Image (cartoon, rainbow, N blue to C red):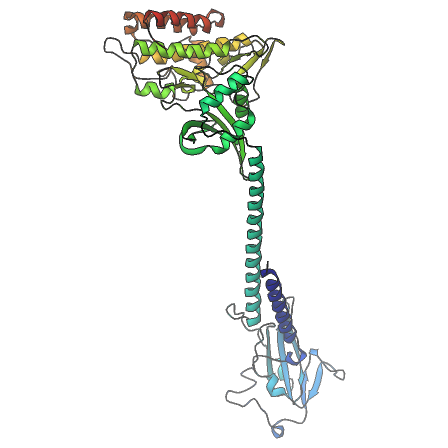
Length: 526
């Protein structure tokens, strides 16, 4: 802060210099300074000093603005010279005045003497009324010339402003650093100690056996979130970004929501922390936290990491045999069944509908099974009050996977079973995606999204409404499916899931039992 007194001292000195210079420019002794005598009034080579014997004893001059008290008819008498002066005042107005000049000092006042503060020109002559014909002109403005004091004033002001800015910036960052330090220590007080040997699996197991079954305690979640190291971005969607992170060497997935998606973050966190929500075919939830960095807020959702990625990515690169197909379809059905099923009891679980089921929202685990993710649009059903808990989110589901009743807006939003049946339609489309990649007789189709040949890559509501509701079309199937027992059974299953009438669709429990029999007949271990 020592720069502040110095800056004020420099400013005060500059102002005094400026005022002193300005006062000097207004001194009456300088009023009659000019640029010289007009050529016709003073011949070239003639000395500006006129001897007394060469001057007439009395000279009559025209006066205007500089008339003495005894002047009559704008006429004055002098033993010196007649003059005419043009000058610019402080307001920028130009004034032309004339008068008589005494002999004493007239040869100095008629000489050229530029002044930086005032623009003026004076011309003198030595015959009667000669100044009436004088027409002095103002000197041109020279932008390159200026008072040294003005330059010093501008430099000092610039230096002072820069100094003040630097001091302000330093003070701001010092204040910010102290605030961050205080907040860091405050956060440390709110953290809990996690033993060095405990893994995420250990912590989750402890919370399930001794807690309420709704996940890790909030302080443990905050502690884990603060200790995670972000490694690299592995995905991006409309809600935000997905990063690979590490906690004590363990890989985790960190879903970073955009600030505008706070409602989705809150809803997904709420669903994941529902009592008895944890299931092997539902993405494992670890922690959620809000991190404020001053300029913006980050919304974190930390889950298990699955290196195979989504079902969408997996099917594009991998072909399936019959066992792999059944393993994927059955595990996805198990996860969806756990969501849809209400568990009664003191610590029960409400029934939940996903509302955005698709291949991009299903992840593939190392053992080739599925786990359902992205619960930001999920709805809960409270059987005690018979109310449907719908999230306050502006997001809607994916149009390509929307059921007919959603597209034509005939879905009863107050009836929870309607959401369940809409999920079943989406599940049927996902099974179709899986079945296309199953190899039979050495033949397999390329991976494609449902309705790929009927609608654009990003279909509108109108596109899907026309295909699904008006024309009643469904994804096309290959003739080879009918020649394989497993694919034929899967075709029957998916057709009953995507029926036009919601009441005609299979429930997920029925699908799960059907697939369980197929898995058992194939002696598949899941």
